[in-house]
Length: 141
Figure 1 (cartoon, rainbow, N blue to C red):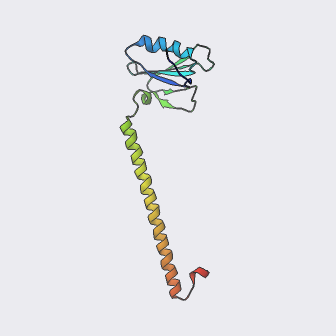
Figure 2 (spheres, rainbow, N blue to C red):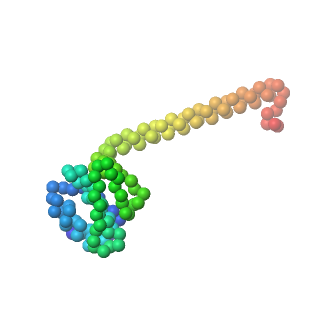
Figure 3 (cartoon, rainbow, N blue to C red):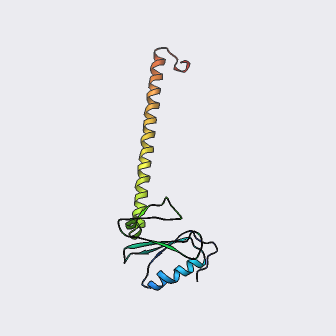
């Protein structure tokens, strides 16, 4: 039996070889501790089941999603994940590489902004110098 000090809002289970555990026993456990929504992700059957029990009535409503569909969550209505994304999530290494590429791009943008600011400052200093050479005080303008 599961023992949670706080009840999770959503549980995502990936099926194992023990279908009885995944499809039957856990449903009863989750209903008992009043988990409002859980997903069964079955890569072998290429499906995602969303079981929701928002009213804690010990009866889960279930919806089945197959490739080509978007998984709909009752707990997170703005969440939009294609079944393919759930069945084949990106590897952690890919996520890290993507984040690093975004960081490099941001650093490049900051560098370019600093270069432009330096160029503008140098241009302003040259203009001020030229005005002084012409006998005009640029600070009094």
